Image 1 (cartoon, rainbow, N blue to C red):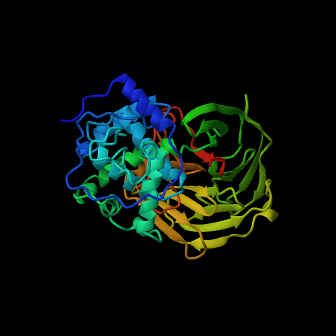
Image 2 (image 1 turned 90 degrees about the horizontal axis):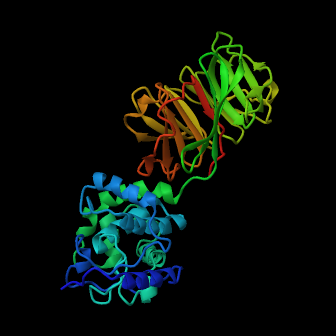
Image 3 (image 1 turned 180 degrees about the vertical axis):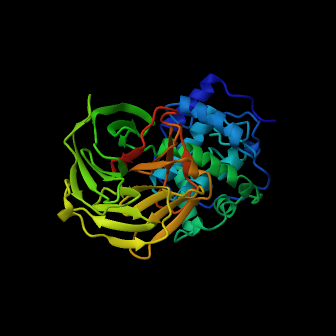
Length: 449
């Protein structure tokens, strides 16, 4: 008969055992195959458990549990709690801190769903197994196995040994779990792989929260300049919008922010005039010097700057890359442009990093481009729904903002913006649901990591 729920004293002791465990990687012995299903995998059973995070659960853990209970499809649907989210969070963080592909976290979470229903079990239910992964005594001490960071690293160490040369990235998730755990019931892991991905997608942004401020300039319908600052970790506005009292004096068509006080804006007219806007202050008020016309022939529909000398522009579906060699460019310090390609019928365009672009189409595609020469590399991240945005912004660090015409600004986090897929791209709480009435928007690049 299984043990009853633990007393407060036993829970505290188990949590202390976890908190003072060894926090390092390990090379465990081979796991022994189990002759019967581990009783600890029963999602509704009650066991003695240790805290996963020594600091306890958070309000975000509780909120994510509610969210996940409505989105999971398999075993854990309706059973997620703040505690279980905190356990998954520690496992995901351990994988992330090693710099491994997100798939490593998915493999680890699929394993703990099967083994313990995402609980750090501190009593020996199945032989001498302990912890989230139900690791036997041959893996390490009790304190180590009850330390989620140590246990996850031990699991990942073996995974990498069994699947060298990153072969675990392409092997079926359930197969990898089984190779590490050596279970008598190998088919159970793959059944939880999809939910493991959902859990990682939901939690990872809070583990790998971006650091930095998004500085966003905009233009209103009457030609005034705006400035807004957003804390990228929380998605909250920290400053503004501050709006200038003066107008630009011309009808803007496309804009690109170069740095904290320099913006390039084209005029919507046959001459394609290019202006440089030099901002004086954007603190309690927004003031700038009179716009300086620096060139003509800039009939581009879209502009963006990547923060590393590269200005990209699309005109009539043709993408060109220009090099800018000074912080306050003139016609002489902007190169004539390199043809990247044609057929770029994009609705929006932003730079996410040096020589990386992100854009959307009228049909709702979300596309990432690696401009590594000609030809470039194209990754189709999403097949639909992104047509709702009329502006796309990125301050770097995998942070994306999508603006809708009704005035809302939506936030997305891409845990790995360079992997060519959207498995780890997740929607976050919108910055604002109303109030963003600008007709043009542009974020200063490379301010977030």
